[in-house]
Image 1 (tube, rainbow, N blue to C red):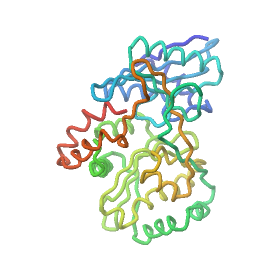
Image 2: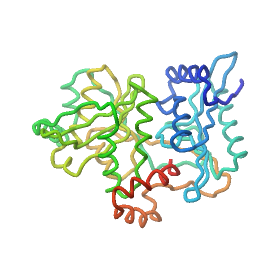
Image 3: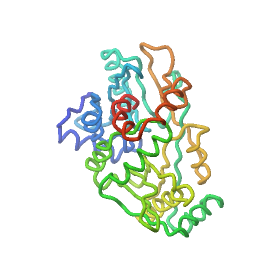
Image 4: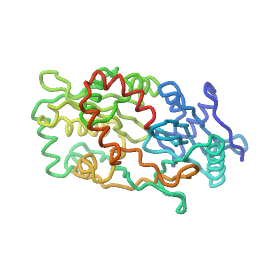
Length: 344
């Protein structure tokens, strides 16, 4: 078993890597090689994308990136800005070799911790984070069956959006989406990702990334979502909405429209993504009839004594959140990229 590091610009290596990701049962959308380019170009993060091969055939991959910040610490993460990560392998030997390479790299970089964002628990003896859950549900082959599978109260909201003559359309650019997203996160007191990052996602992933915009009958953009498509799954990942969206049921209509279109494409799984337990988004997804599944983020601690809590639920960030909400939106969008690059 040999572990190699994928070099930026290695076209053939990236092709082999991505071909493995497409077929490996443990792999996710966030294991694709394009994330190395995106993280480097958009945020300056150094990527350590390791793959294990035997007899010239890849048996496992592990995408990692170094995230270094005075405010949030120094870490090696699989993978920043991703809800899933860790090792994707088809043999125990490949998984062990990749984890060993990750730990050696973490020590060489003198990071405070190594973080693997696993969907399945791998090491009972490693420190872990139990803050997050994911929501995944089967997409039924019939459109009406999917509608009836939504609990009654939430189904009524979807029908309300339909009665309001809302319309959904795919955008080729992120212009309208970013305006909705940036306004949304500003209201919640968190910095926005840079607009260029979202455009890079569309450019890098092509048909596997898509922006859906919901507008009012008068054509006013109300709600938007940037989704990823992976094998037979759809993953609505980044979202934003206007203040008026709630009264018009635009958010429920948006996710129904995404599910309806996924059903028409023959997709099998709707992945509602990650939420923190006991939050508004957690409740919203539960109300859609999705059941939470714990995510198993595991850590190796080197220069710190406890698992980091770099999230808005941490009480020490509440003052910053309140102050951010008071910033003018233009100032917040200018400052945001300088801060958010370190959150990951």
